[in-house]
Length: 334
Image (cartoon, rainbow, N blue to C red):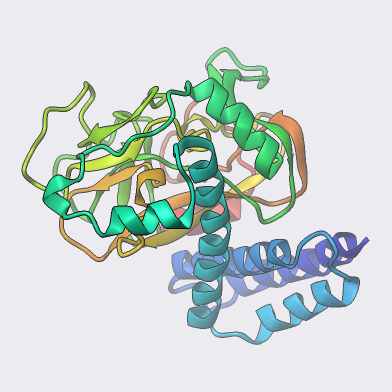
């Protein structure tokens, strides 16, 4: 099988990362090393996914070879393109499910309507989140469900499960919520629903909860928002997004392995037709939304999704935390 070969070669790459991490060349900036290692993985996984299930062993080997030669910026660019390609397919499926007239003629007519005459929240089919989730699974092969975690620990709580099957490199989940620029002063560090990108951007998923049952104006508040004038904070978002549950993923328990990884993705706000399906709002003015998506690191089928939290080994960690890789934890926290 092509992926078996890819996994073997990828394991060798991982060994190389371990050697580099201990060298004096990279020890001055271990955090950068970990970021580059993650981008390298994402480059391989998402590129392989884009080839599809008919990929040959030679295709996998070519991706590995490219990963060894491409610069960091080239790999970053390719990862962005690969994720965007998957996102386009996801949004097209959501349009088919939710829009009452999903055809080009109607879309063109809508584009010619003056902005002042358009409704603030476009019309969608009156479907519940559970219905949308089932229909999405029928189209892309999988969806997500939040239910009690299978991790044998009293603090495990709710977990996020894939219902259906997904290949390695698949975009499985969005990390929803409010996006804060690096250094934003009012982010509560004790909030367990925070995630931080390598560039220091923080996303707070707590206000999002489990979404909702409609498409609505959302400004990141905990309750149904009132209309505001700040367009940078307020957006019309689809709250019935079946993949907007990245904040429910647990860290793996003892003798368990993570099966997804974090992927930074910059969504271009010029893609207005897709905007409603990106479950984030940002504080500030920028041409992109600096989001986080979660990508499969192996083929998955009807199982709980688990993410390596990489909690710092320089601070006291929770009782439930079992390190996946102490060296990664150390590099990520530096």
